[in-house]
Length: 393
Image 1 (cartoon, rainbow, N blue to C red):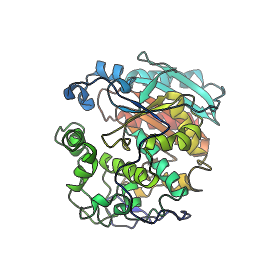
Image 2 (cartoon, helix red, strand yellow):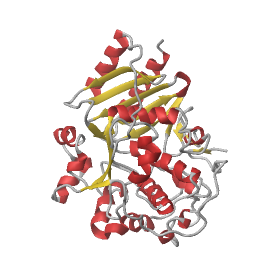
Image 3 (cartoon, helix red, strand yellow):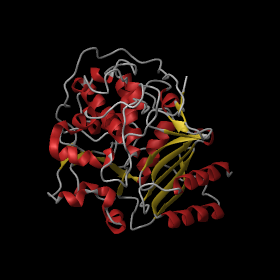
Image 4 (cartoon, rainbow, N blue to C red):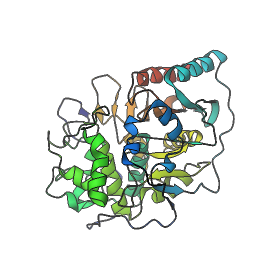
């Protein structure tokens, strides 16, 4: 069954999960072993308020977040996946994509079909050898690592209580919430994701880091209140994806970036490595902020499109990218940290980052951008353009 936004329903359980971890775990991942720690110069905290950077600052800093925030550097794989040239988009369609890039201040767009490049373009001084920050596109990476932890037996079931892997949340609003319910953001715990409000929960995350250090994520989540029974209300929560990251790191015993080395970077055949921001625990921020090349965003989409064989449980992406939460708009919804669209699914990040997948057409479109605002109606316009690309032969 599915949860319909605004209506009561039950969660959809994922079948085929392997048995594994059965005890309680520590609250902090072990030290990274195969990733390098990157520590930037110390800066005034006021300079680190990303949501309030100017247009000029965003265009410059989105390409080099490792100069502003600490994180893990993940080495590239020995054998990157080739992306051969395919038939180019028609001149008229290519011109339309370029015009849209101009209108929305996109920095790069890549179109893959049948695993071949049909379009690639860059702007804003950004190029194919540079990385760009993901913002919430990282959520879909974290979801994939959750699937890997299930397949590897570190997480025994999506029906497990969150407190099994994060015992410090016992006695909070997360008591009785399952791993699947945080994966679908249906915990019923209240959260404010208003990017324009300095007092919103999402804007206050950095304050908790300053005040609580390694305990920041749990400290913030412990203070939240319940607004609905678990499984009955969908609310978009970056803090909850950060919690998924803690669940995975506690279960696996590694930072997300190190686990991603074999489960994503190598498995998807990236051509470059990855930078993923860390928090004071020494773990990675599950809900945000990894940096990779445009072509590697496209490779991640191709990896999901092909099912992640050998990394996640069989059929994982079929479930993760299904509309487990249905919105009022027919055909649109939310899965395990993937947005579901009519005929496809994708990953989204503020300021115009996205991976869009149309399975029926074997199509992947990756875009990185510097929108003038964190959210925009351009998101819907972009999806309509992707559908136009999918419809063209």
